[in-house]
Structures are given as C-alpha cells and as structure tokens.
Image (tube, rainbow, N blue to C red; front, top):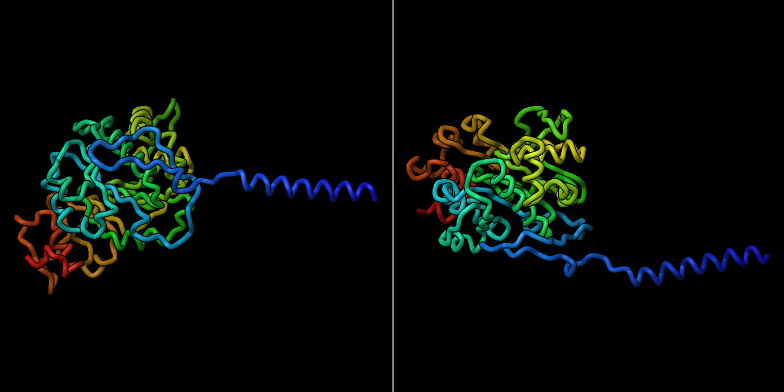
Length: 320
C-alpha cells in the first residue's frame, strides 16, 4: 500500500515539474530572428535564424525568396529584360545580387539590388562569395523556400509556387534538374561522388535543408568548400546536399537551361514551365505562334519580352 502511494506521489511530482518547465521554456518566434538589412550595404555576419518551422500552411509567393545572381556588366543586357518582364510578377520576393553599384537599377527595383562586394572576376572565389552571400541573406529572410536563378533565366513565379507546393517544405528538399548523371571530385584526400542541380536552370531549396547546409555554405564558408573540393559554387551546393548531407535531389522537367535546345520547347507547354533560359542563338521560338505580339530581335534579343507577352498578354510592356 505504501509502495503504491510513493509511486502516485512520484508521478504527480513529475507532472508538476513538466508543467513548470513548459512555462519557463521559450520557443523561437519572430522576435528571435535577426533579419539582414536588404540594400546596398547589407551585413552578412552574426545571423540568427529560426530553426523551427512556423506553420504547415500551403506555400504562397510570399513564402519564397527568389534570388537572381548577376554581374555589373550584365545589368543592361540581361537584368533589364528581367526587370521589364517577370520581375514585376514578384517584385517583393525577388532580389538581384551583383558585384557593382547601380543606383538607377536599385531605384527601379525598389531597393532590391544588393552589391555583394565580392569582386567582379569570373573566378571560383568571387562567385562562391557571391552565392554564399545570397545564401546568408536567404537564411535571414525566414522564408520557407530559396529559389535561385541566374541572370539568363525567364522565371514564371506563379509556376514556381505551383512547383514547390508539390512538396513538403518542412522536409529536406532540393528541386532541380541534372546536367549529367553524376560528378566525382577529390575532397580531403578521398574520391567523392555527387550530383548537383544545374544552376543555369535554377533550383529551389527548402528551409530545413538550407539550415543543414550552413557548415559548408555561407559568404566565407562556401569559398572554403569550393577551394577544398576543387569545384564551382553551383556544383558545391549539390556536393553539400548529395554528398555531405546524403540528400537525394528531387528532379523536375519544369526548369530549363541553355544546355537544352530551347527552340524545341513546345509553345503549348510554355505556360507550364517554371523557368526557361536563354543564350545567343538558343532561345524559345514563338515566331510561328498565332495571336502573340512578336518583338523584333533587335529590341528583344533574349526573347523574354515576347515570351512574357505570350504568357501574360495584358502586361503593360505588351501594349507598347
């Protein structure tokens, strides 16, 4: 009888202790997240991030951080067509990361141009610094998804939302497209196999996975990773995900790079695509499509304006 009484008292003591601790514990909320200032002089140090998912609601455009990486020398030829077209569909969510000041572009985009101050050379160190800065800025944003694109991508933000909503953002997900089945590299004296989502097509990374990438991926960390692994920064993201973290890529056919013959894309399917690349001599072909405003190649060499008017014929730029 006395033994049963002691067990009951012990159980009540445990319950009371748990109730007391539950009141003392403080879980991360919005006040626990320090956001990096978005602007020309953003700081990318000592970032506090929210580890626990906020909710499980359906993802909206506002839950996605869209980054476009470019260089100052491409502002006119590549960024200008983007700003005139799909950027306007996601002005609040899209940030342009570059390597030089451009007050005019920064004003046009509402302060969404970030000079990374990483250097303008097209080399491993500068590109890794730039991509690492994008990563740090995404983490500080608190968004559920990081969708990264290059300056030669036409992006349909509405289809990007549909794409990520096919997956659970609270899991470790990287949505992308392979360029080749796999790569090998020498890392710390060992031969390692990895895959990567081709940066020219774009990719989307969920927040839980991005947080796990932190030891190898940041403004300074990614420079070290690419140097030690002997690879470019977009390859390094795949190396971190598929080799270090052992996470399989989630493949999609809705992201397209210039490694494909883009003129072979069926115009009837263009409304379904999330991103489409461009390069001189390799663009979507809408010349034979009916009921679409075709812009002269001198005015629209990337074909982004013609494509935009095909997808969104009521856009202001289509009325010119």
